[in-house]
Length: 114
Length: 116
Image (cartoon, rainbow over the protein chains, first blue to last red):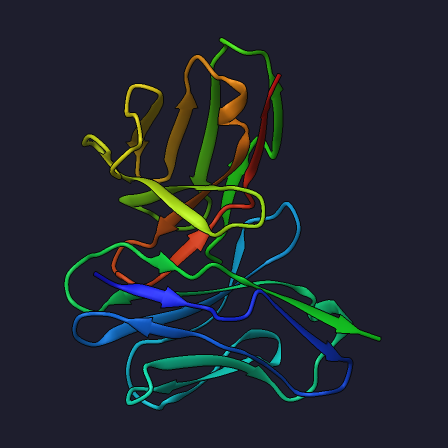
């Protein structure tokens, strides 16, 4: 069965500094990997996904993530954080064969201070 | 494109009543939709997978008679919480899988249900 681990409940970073939100996964076969962001009392907004191809994936709002197969990781990164990036971030995974449900991590709260 | 509308965004109901939540894909067709429940400061828990024209597939531990799902068209799925109790209070989120892909899933804005 697939699983996702987001080891940090919260990440604090100063505005303008780079940020990293960690994600590791476990899945049978090759994965589809996703990052979503959630603002208070809102649904999830898609940020980016890894399906195949380049390990570095660029997404919305300046975010990017690097797929590392050997470390089974898909960390979310941004070179320069904004206060408006403060939100809850979810990593999700599913196998790339057939149709299977997404499994979400527990979420990481990102707090960007001015 | 790829907009999912979920309605209502907030609802308060009395114990024992039923509440219907709608999930619509506005600009694409979605044979498959998903219903999630999210507890405070927790991740999303998949409740059921809804397929147009067929019965929903419920996850283990989710009562199908309590959480009725109807996926009557390629753009609309509904979740009805029947005989609601305070413990049903939660944030419910739908997701639509765009037809023709198996990776393009888009989420509604969520419904905050409070049962008093």
